[in-house]
Length: 605
Image 1 (spheres, one colour):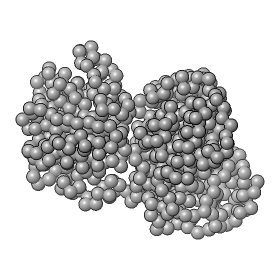
Image 2 (tube, one colour; image 1 turned 90 degrees about the vertical axis):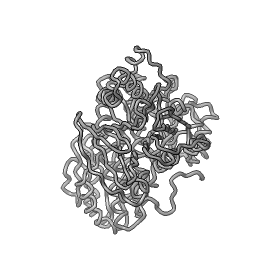
Image 3 (cartoon, rainbow, N blue to C red; image 1 turned 45 degrees about the vertical axis):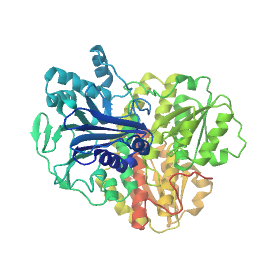
Image 4 (tube, rainbow, N blue to C red; image 1 turned 30 degrees about the horizontal axis):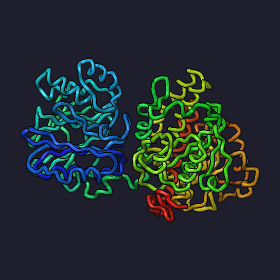
């Protein structure tokens, strides 16, 4: 979820770039940088800083960049290499600078070739190969654009790239594949680049949205765009006037946007970690798992539900006892702590007070600790012995969606990683899990007909005396999460239950005004769940069945796709439950992003 901004023009470039990056803060980042070059190409000034943009602004406070020139800026969310100034963008060659969003899948191969050629690398990133490849080609071809074209052809993966060079000092070279890139322009021959609309509003009048495979170059008086070596023309459209609307990228609410982003962010969560035949966590030392015979996971709210999902997987695949604790209870129960337990905490913000206190208890007791978090340099991240960042980007909607999805994905990856270390699953089983993981981004692509169907169904659920969300195995925590999402933004009473618990008390509430949301996957305990739902239908409960198999007793039915892995079904049903809660809340006229009585980061008890 990194951010890119570029500018060609006569105005103060530092302010345009940093202010543009400020508009992209919502995407999440751990470091930032800027590079500015005058039109004569005598020098390129660059600045980098770890942490917030205020640190970059402080570093550039005495720098002025008036007069014609080109500038590029970047906010980085680490995928290769830790958040340091060396790893921050822009990355430099001998006479060029580059910024990049995405991942270069074949960077190791390119880096090895360049090192044999004598190139010295300064960073741990995949991005640095771009600028060195460009300069190598340019030194041979003596033509900067042909050198850039050759560089882009060499790359495999996802990228939005801006490159500036003394070899052609009035120009920004650009390329886009699978990562957003927008070019804007105004009436003064000024040209702007960005990852989204927001930084362009108030500066550019029109913009063109590049498609995958497009690349080219821009000068003050021209923009040339190519695809497959052929020059093409693209339409420049009027920009929206509202910056908050632009940040939402046309969606009604940030929560809705974040639901649609899940396909992309799950891909970013997997970047560099999900390999062909193994799960790899460069950020973890394998010694973390030495002499561990138990896992304790501590979290609150949505993160607690993600933890519950993983407890099934840890015990099933890694064959290790796993306990899940509610952090607000754990800190007061005088817990008995096993010295051979790995203590895992999960938090979106990294500032959750109860979870932070639980982590302190575990640390003081000498336990090994691991944090799974979305925010680098947060309190929990700084305190934990080891950290896995989920890379979800900033989540503005108070009701968590993409943070939950990435937490579950990280935990699933960690289960397979640990199972491989413990040799509790075979190589064929690992390949099966990895194949399922790689399929999840496709499953999370939101289809318009699904949204339309759920919107139509949602009008049935505005009255009644409550909701039961029910499921078995990993779908029980998903039922809890579905109920929580509905409670948070619709203010309707909802409860999540294991399906088999209905007859142990809750079924007493069943009547025609009780809504049952039944999660009925085919890969886990379908017949058992079906029997439980039939019991509720016999008591006249209004049934919404979510399943790949039609359930004849249901009042409403959402058909899911045929999958051969339970986690594939899990993520598809997760998506449906999120949209279901959203559409009911919209019909009720609620502020989806700012539900009453709730805060995004709970920093007090």
